[in-house]
Image (cartoon, helix red, strand yellow):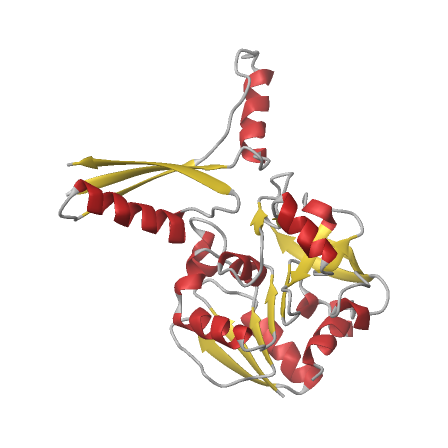
Length: 82
Length: 215
């Protein structure tokens, strides 16, 4: 059994109003050391596969067909054995 | 005149658009549940507004894997006319029938109000529509986005159908609605079905549906 850990964020070129709003709140609190903030989502899924490579292929296919809209989003995928 | 309205779990404007097509245009309306397929060729297929699959993950993302959408894609690729309103527009971009994507409104607010829409005269669909139209919008994720090349292509090909007079949501190039290259698939955030008879106080949506129902 493997676990795929997926972080999805908006592409750098896409305005992230949610991230900007959170950043503004931090600045209002005087936390001016924070210079950039982007809000994304984290998805975790368990995969029953015979090898790490197979699990990665399945996870990538699922990311690109459903979990991530590549017009606006980018993702990082890590697959680990559990 | 035959129309199919596709209903997804969470669609909530299916009966609205179906009933105005029946009462105002005399269309015979069939409702297709997302699990069903169809192979006939109605005059128009409508993907209605709402919150398909609860809008979880991304608006419109999960609808594309349904049997009904498989049929819609086939029908559209054969030249069939498709209208996607609001969530329907989001489903059209997610399923690849239209380019780009819909992002959160720049203000992060859900916006529900009447907006002025300008039909873009270079567009095949919009050139049949006269004047500025007042049509309601009701969405949280309606900011149209596409990369620079796609935007340029849309503008060059005359695929922008409607622009907002005053951009409410941060859409690039003030885009409120676009069509595909062939001109048979239209997606728009405003709801023409909500501006169709005097009881709603507005009539401007009628022109849009009329143009689409014309053979």
